[in-house]
Image (tube, rainbow, N blue to C red):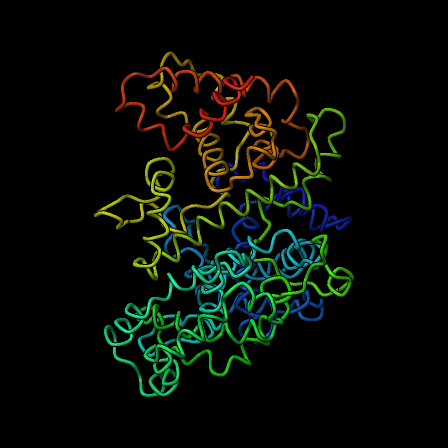
Length: 531
């Protein structure tokens, strides 16, 4: 287990789930490494189990815990592979050496980890009404593959929901303004026709399945009519079923763009199986009438008891447990605004999910996504250092989707203490100061990806720094780190770093720190200039 996970809010949430069960509480204390290892596999196992059953359940009934646990253990190796296959710093794979070790793992999954998922990862519509954009983006990460079906070449098949979710991410259907233009730019006829005619050979069933779609692309009049479905007036007038139908047709076009990465585009069939699988998500993903004029959920959704699985596993960033954790610390905890904290947590999830989805989209259709990156080249290339430009408006990823997780930015008390032990006399001295640079990197991402961030924290760098430490930890069980004095002293260390950054004359030295400090510096200096 990584050192940064030892003071994660995960343990606080697990103790709540264990309640008064002394045995489970004992395991939480003594089996941290095993539990931390098992949980991500358990969560992705639940996703795959739902794909296996072809239904995304409304929570998991306790009568199904043992069956689900057996599914996870039977497929443990495959689940580990799809979870960590491209992750550079992956946990060492555990081998259950004997029946006792195997039974212990099963016991923890069935009695602690599945109940944790039930408690924190299934949300009513009213709980995630403000998070649907994050849900759409993060769903790409968990629904990419289906281990229950193996292709002819022995690779994992793309899951049924994946091309549809890919399409939603590509066109941002929830934003009606500019929807037609986004669809028009992403689905260029010449690109679609070239993709259709080149690359891997279509299978006979695929050719038959895409016949109407291919004819649609070639017919200028029908193509114009189809695109008009995404005009503001038409899209706004469509009900959920009509929107789904138009999006399904668009998804078929997406599969042409993804041709070389999908083993068989016929998985969509007539769309009914897909509809049944994701139906519970559609009211917030694509519905035309989910809200009233005041942007409140309609009563049918607001009062619904239906819960859907969040694509976030809520392990180390658990929005639901932040307030109970803070309250357990009494008046020692620094003052904060609860609404601002919840919005900052949502922005955190959204920004990292947006980065991951951008990277994943770029893997599949770089020729389309390069155009999006070019518009914000200064941000993605110069500041965040996520891409590098190889040719004019052609970009290469510098980090993969699997290797940029908010969980990699968690903070531990030990590393903060180590920061205070060091002496810094110039910017170069911070080269190996990972803790302060990690915080700077978080702030860079939050400010760069979500334009609402500065206004939310009233343009105060200290406030943003404070909320980052509340969200990312540390969250020790027996005391609190987030006191006024601790955060103020640590913030002073961060300001010292920023001052060195601002005064650095050597551009070669300074360039290294841009990805960590540029936007924090701009916010600090903007406030000073506007006082």
